[in-house]
Length: 200
Image: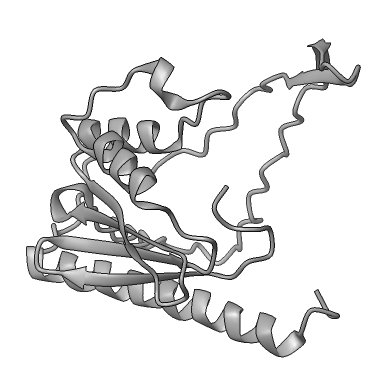
């Protein structure tokens, strides 16, 4: 790893004309030029991945990020230094990969006959017990949770369709959500800093 546990990491979100950038700055050790060059090659969509070049033990992080970026069409770079002396990673997600949240369907108007219907209660679905599927090298049991039956709540009438938002509305909704996310993470960092290391 390039950062010691407990080293602060800052994540910011920036809207750009072609989509959104997630900017991750850490205060770790940084990377030397050889490691940066290797990362650029592995993160490139044209970068060929040879398992023997990933080290011993293999370090899959950059290779997997590069494959996912090539498959889904986003870009990742780690070539610059963060303001804190560590690494700055920038993930650029194109607008084509962003989706606006579907508006909530309008509540159907129900006629009342004078009697109030009791609210419908959903019964919880129990999850099956886990069972041992093997043991770890240290002798601990490996468990796999069994999938219980899935409870399905009936959906509203499929013929009722909501108005599709315009691209401008979709962009505004996306920007609003990303802004709320950024404010929440910033508030969490402020609260965490105010508490101090003794309170964590």
